[in-house]
Length: 389
Length: 117
Image (cartoon, rainbow over all chains, first blue to last red; front, side):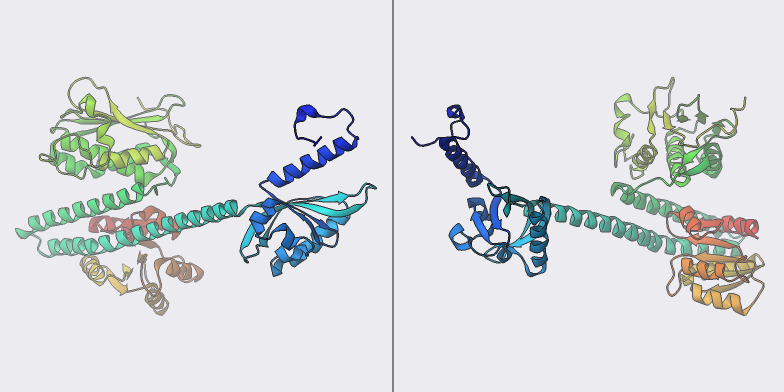
């Protein structure tokens, strides 16, 4: 009767000749069906067995390779590998998951992971080594590819930053010359009717500079490049500075700007970007506020985030538009009536989100809109002084 | 007041020079950091340096490094004038307390010059 691989036919006496033959056949079947190359070699490195997976991996048939030295699989720079592996085997040690390179019959280099164990005879003497070689070319390729993509992404980010910096410089430099020349002309022509026109021209330069900044910000933020530069700063101080800077616009819009805030509120924020958020919210309030008063309120209760609200009494925002207006190129009203790129609130949202905060439109009683931002204060965030009453 | 204006953009430098001179300041211009260092080493008495950042030959960073190494020049206040959108960051990198973003507002610049000196 031929031995079978059926486990149910396990003989009782495991040392019987039949059992030994069965075990040998089972081991052979496992070796033959393995996806990994399984090779045995003598202690002086001569190949003594070679399974089908070894044939697939290295291209040699068993008949071609058995009896030849294992070094035929090694690239010249790896010949030292053999001696060090065999030395360890002679001492009875195993070599596990040793990553190296081997060469196929066609000369193709293959990344492999080797596990090598000593083979002992019946007397327990080490007589050779059994080696399992796993093809890790795909993993090595994926690792190299990941490394390459990471490097490419890092270079992309660096290039983008350089580009935006250079673009900003190139666009603002002529605007700088133009603005200064216009100012110099205004001084030289003091008292002339042209001064008013020159003032208007200077105002247009400011608008162009503002648009340039916004477009560059959009490019930076859209590329995922906005990381707030956090530093200890006073939010109330910033709000007063922004409101003071916008007084002239408020006068032109006919709106009064009112601030209600504690004397000081210090946190870890990026001042320049929050300046932009507040400027955007106030510009909108002036634009859509119908010349009515605008209230800026700053509140903080306990450890909760700081909440800044900008309340106008103008057109308001329909409940159905409250999410949409924070999208790119979105606007609350028709572009036929009001200009703008439709990016201010989108930029504001990216900046506030990058601070770990929230921005939105609250339900406010009466006409008009109430925009809010909520900002965590960061590690050092604290009320420098209690709210003034 | 004696002012050293370091900027490679000639139209900007010319306009700024006119404005500052009309305010009664003496202005010397330099088109890069190298020329600025030479001007500073040739003559004493500069009260403030108006410094652009991106310039050929010697940029604002390299100039600042040289200036801070030279004990005779290190204490002259610097106002960074930058066309980069991150003026505050640039100023911090340049170890300068004062900065303005281009395009410059002349009244703001005059105020900052008064504060810096």
